[in-house]
Amino acid sequence: MKSLLFRWGLFAALGVLLNSCTQPGIIGSDLLKGDQIGVSFTDTLPFIAYVQLTDSVKTYGSDLGEQLNSYLCGQFADPVFGLSSAVINAQLVLNSGNPPNFEGATLDSMVLILPYVASRVYGDTTEAYQLEVYLLDEDMLDTANYYSNKTFAATQLIGSTTIFPSPSDSLEILIHGSDTMGTQLVVPQVRIRMDDAFAQSILTEDTLVLESDTSFLEKYKGIQIRGASQNKGMLSFNLNSSLAGLTVYYHVDTIFSQYSFKYTSTSVRMVSFSQDYSSAPANAFLQDSTLCDSLLFVQGTSGLGMVLEFPDISLLENKLINRAELEFTVITLPEDMGYAFDPVSQLIVSEIKDDGTLAIIPDVSVGLARQDLPFLFGGNIDEEGMPQTYKMNLSAYFIDLKNGDAGNRILITPLTRAELANRVVLCGPKHPDYPAKIKLSLTDY
Image: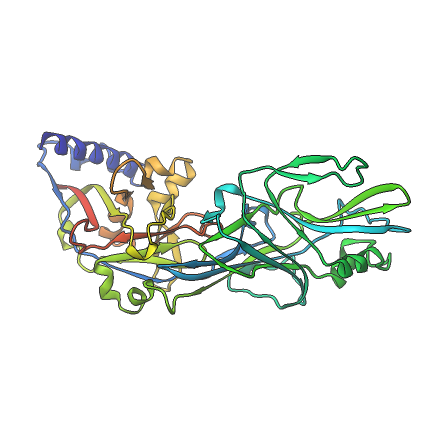
């Protein structure tokens, strides 16, 4: 009991510390002077929890801060969450604005190079993954904002490959033009050879088409990279890498050369997401919210999010909120067949406004601003404990809720969900063994 009281005392102290960032009148106020009424602890505040489809997420904006650091690709056939698809649509432009000179050139090959983002590759990488590359039929606008529900038509197949992903292993490739068939090591990447007919059309293209980014994009609007196989995982690529792009290998007489069409910060790169829950176990919970008393589901991309509603906060009347902490326990379902899918590493919470828009709660915004989200807010998974848990500090939000400055619905999603395929199953508020709870430290006044 003493250990428990000490722990909650620490929670109360941290709660007051965070509150001071957003409620400057609390520390040192008259409420904390004079005779102290004992601190009380409770986890009986009622709440309703359920899952819902999240809105599309922005995957491209003209500002650098609105562009992704990693790009998901593939069809993730999740045994619990169903089928999630990620399709990359991207413009390629001239290398540093310099036109190629293919006069008198003989084609050797053309390769699309896609460096991995190893930390974002998700799920089982022991399977064969099939990728296809198409030419876009539609223009992409660098002044537009593109969200993940935007799709682009692409009908001409220009390349394909089947790989066993090795996102952490260097790749050995032949040195172009080497008489001794020498090799070199390159960073972990996927290399997709383009059809020779398409490659030859680039090599013999009119010089007017190849003289500028504008003229090139008028004819070659971009490429689409999609998964052609359903796998128990999803790939992730770094299109910001200087190595990423479409490289033409050629020679003129005995001189071997190469030229790369590049992705740049000024060329559009976005990801389209889609989900199919029709045959997924999670779909029953999506259709019947009462089932969410036992289990809840959260995933990246534009997948499922978790909503909490607080219909009755009368318990907070005449109380000073020292600390409010939300706790969820991770659970593994039999449908995973023993495969350990990595759970979401960092959750965040947003208030759902009356008009349906979202606003990150103060506890999260302060943690992000101070670049110390796990300490100030939590939301990161406790990987040492068994079972694993998430704990989230909602103290500032509950103070706003009590004062009428916040609505009574919140949405829980992964941080940077546009770049994550991770998912997690959590115990609901009426789970028989590990019920979700809101732990409150309160003081009468």
